[in-house]
Image (cartoon, rainbow, N blue to C red):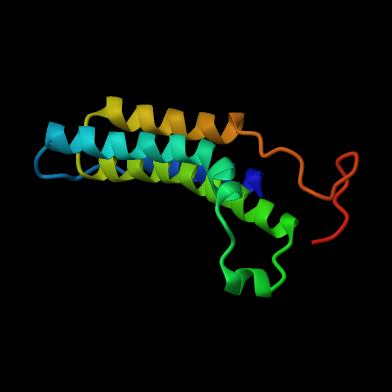
Length: 134
């Protein structure tokens, strides 16, 4: 699944470099800064999401559906990767509103590096890296 997120991020980068931005006016610098800040907060939350979700109490409706630790681990991993990918999507938005290339390239680099460097850990119930069942 991680490979799919990386490929999707690479395809978004291709879109940024192949499709020119046709904004009538350059983006407002305060808007550039605000979107960049939101994207960077998303990345930080992506790294913190597994720990934050593991501390939250389960909803009774979720616990009735026999949510296993493995399913919870998968949800935390997908949430983290989605937050990293959203950083690249924010870069795409900045590109199309005519933002400076510095902000676009910064968000692309941070998003891709986060996807590459992030480690989900071993899933619960796995022994020696072999997943039993989920």
